[in-house]
Length: 127
Image (cartoon, rainbow, N blue to C red; front, top):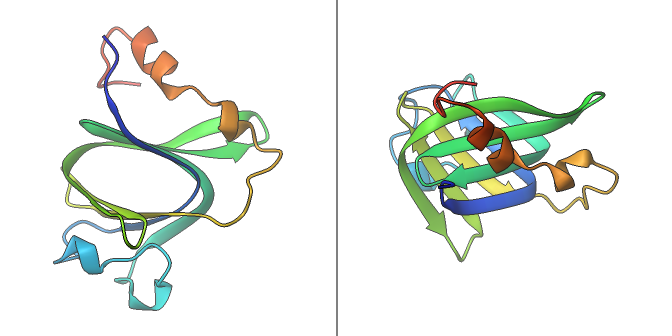
């Protein structure tokens, strides 16, 4: 049985804050970089798939879509008004996700199928 997909955002702007640096995940915004905690990394033109228990982030590379982040989810929230997703991982990282206004044209991320890759593994916690 495949895991349930909570959200699939492409193209996305994703900000990832270091563990335990964001007190209120809803005040951490993907696009307001001047308010990010020190050490926050922002990725644009990415694809994020939020499963019921894991988050997967992929970027396009010369060899095709590359998984650059995978971690278990502690909490998930969505702000429909702002159109942002907020995730706290089990390691304490805060992730804010917003839809990128770029079209993502020409990227192979559009056809990336991470769920097929998950199901091929005998142990879905290891890649």
